[in-house]
Length: 195
Picture (cartoon, rainbow, N blue to C red):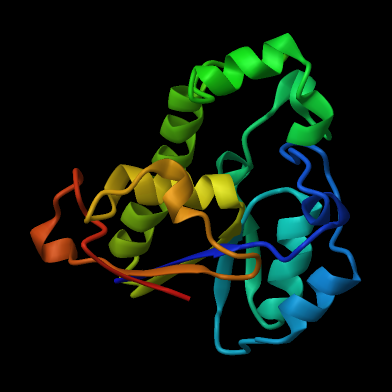
């Protein structure tokens, strides 16, 4: 089975490096151009985060596909840091503490920690793979977020890398060839390539 993990195209907040998790930004003109650059009319179904930026990317990139919203593919909630960038928070003690803790605790005002976020995302991806396999499908295409993709790749890809080393460019990501005959959930992303 082929699993495609695609990041949404750019938004205005992305251009100025803001923490954009639950902020429901649309694509900006650069993002629309990115999505239009690689239209694929052959995909029949795409699983999408509920955020505008992912939905718009999926609609442009895969114009003939049925779009199935999967809430658990949504980006992490950044709580009090949402909509701000690192430069704006250099003197914010709560932000500094969060960064010093490797961004693993829940940000102030956010509902989930890094571990809870990764469990949510990876649970959703596993569910999609299992359902597609049960239906005899040979591919799963997702359009989500950088954090979503990084969480899955850090969890399952080999060789192992740190979370931020898996950060895909906008409107790109990874293709993973899954061997469902020799399923090993601990390292099931052995054969992957960058999009």
